[in-house]
Length: 231
Length: 231
Image 1 (cartoon, rainbow over the protein chains, first blue to last red):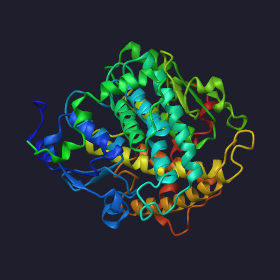
Image 2 (image 1 turned 30 degrees about the horizontal axis):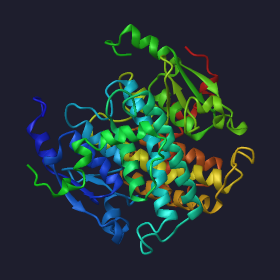
Image 3 (image 1 turned 60 degrees about the vertical axis):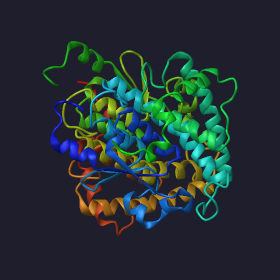
């Protein structure tokens, strides 16, 4: 913790709550960010059951209009949804390491590459899952558009080749250091694993990078995170 | 300009280039941000013709993999795509006003509400335009999924009611001051105007807020911006 942090900050941090689903790819984005920022001990977790559709029911919609997970509740009762927004919040609470960048160029590149990882990989696979596979089951998936879903699957495969090309040129998705953009690609590949959409064999650099990412404690321990006793 | 800015910063600012289309709703997001930050004089504009599909051709795809507008080029030749990323870059170049927030809570709320304005309004209307109307014409719209497009139109109408409810409770989309989240809703309503999807009459607060936003010079002068002689 920074030496200049006040008592109030400590209280604020101590009271954070995360509403999520332990194995979800989007929840993984925030769990990995929490671990990288060493903020795990300040958070308690509440499970919202995706397979029962609890994220689309009134109690959760009151937290977050769009009805997705994860959602962060801070100590004044404010709910913050959307992974990028939660990561921005967490990243500005405390000191290094930065996940969202320090200089203008870093901020721009990290936000661009993270958004690109959503559009071209993570969100595309999510749409494939919800529209062109049984998804969360017939009670939850009340509208499906299979043609759109398959198209998004193909976009995600093309996206894997794109990120492979990036990682042939640089060690991390947005450049020279680990950032939110890496976390978003990791979440995309976690989702790809769940829907059995393997990384193409020829994507050597993406395979190598992902093997390295899976060695990070933040990634390795993300599902068990909510079972750990807070310090 | 901040007194502590260095000579190098000035040079960097002087060389920015924006690739966009003057009347586009996404380009509006960056044009409004530039004007709010008083950075117009540091930028030159290059037109990429949407109706000729130039944004999907090799020259533009080399700037930005996803093939969308706008794109910012900074002085080292780096291209930054995606409106949120460009806004983060511009907002961290110089001093107040802030468009992306200063405290953790402000940053979290602004990013959440801006993303929500994309999901529930701007991106939904864009999908409607490209999939369920003639869009940019048959040469550019080589794949359309009309059912998905109409569904997104309905989502956008619901989104207008949601933002109306927000603006009944607070003066700006993310709270007490103008931010990136307002700009994203403005872009959504600009796009709604282009596709002739009017704001429902009963959305009084949204109508009143939007009338106020249209009085801001940044919003009023956005299309003419690229015609103005740089100072």
